Image (spheres, rainbow over the protein chains, first blue to last red):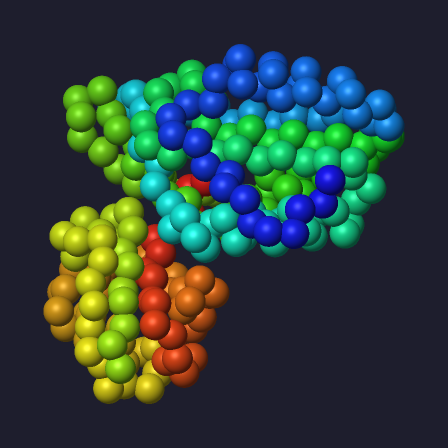
Length: 147
Length: 77
């Protein structure tokens, strides 16, 4: 399931639980898989100086971001014995409680998926040019920084 | 050389635009940044990385690219 060309990781708006459930369902035909692992990033209602975040609006340097996602994918396939992997990230506004990042890895064996998932999520946070505007309930905003 | 410069996030708030084209004679990335610092005085106070043709570069890198991007701190996930 290794792809050669960068594909578009981005989706407009939140990633729905239907979409996630359907992704799991689609893997039932891939019977060499013995273990899946899933990371879901959810927008948190951070409280900053008395104001509460109500949504994050995501933008990205899309061409570079898709290239970086592609490099992360290639490097994960090299490092780990994965059957397949999928990454989806939101663009545009995602409200608190909604999902903005969905990473899905599958392998014949469980140990691999725990390690691979952490590696991939950390690489996404560090290397992919995605920007997040944290919008407060009073419509003011600040810019999110990954820690 | 005519280059395209892209701005994102809080950098685009400073420049009030997401993209522009500039005719430059500099041969290092630092030259372009100096030009932009003069044009947008608030840029000096902002934290950003620089990409040339979609690869991160530093100030001493030779300017070769048609596309430069100023990237504020990443916030994916």
